[in-house]
Length: 191
Image (cartoon, rainbow, N blue to C red; front, side, top):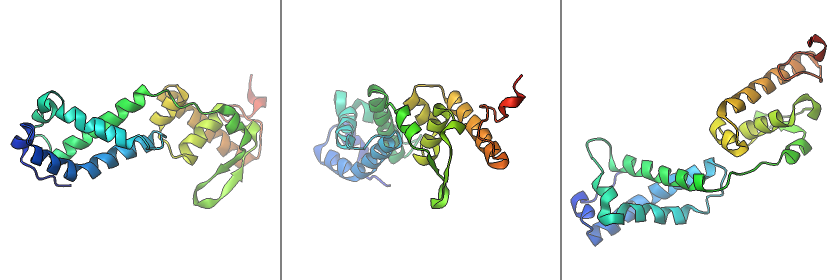
């Protein structure tokens, strides 16, 4: 998106240039804020408030943030996108972590696969934490970082739970055995 304003006049607080700047940048900035909120599992209803915070940050202290923009390093739209995303991330950090109920994950015993198919997985085949991680990653299409934040665990723990669940499910599908350990080996091989 091309934003064409007189940057020098904008940095000096010219009202006409500011209005032109807001008109040209609002959809880009709102879209980035909204997408960042949705990716983190929020409704996106806070987009308007964060958009206002974005413009307040730019004009605070006599447009100090705008004066730091360097056109040699990036396009104005790219620079604005980074600031918009950072504002949304700062907002998300200030919010309480979203808690996901383990009971809800235990009650739902159908795991949805791509292309509309579904496969019934006995609840005993996956521990609640692995089942929850798989649902968040694959049904809710969250990335590892978001799942880690939601569950208040490290990203490596999410990857480990995903790997163990995949190994267990793969073994379950191949052998038909339902009672497997977290590493995919049958319980009789435990010493």
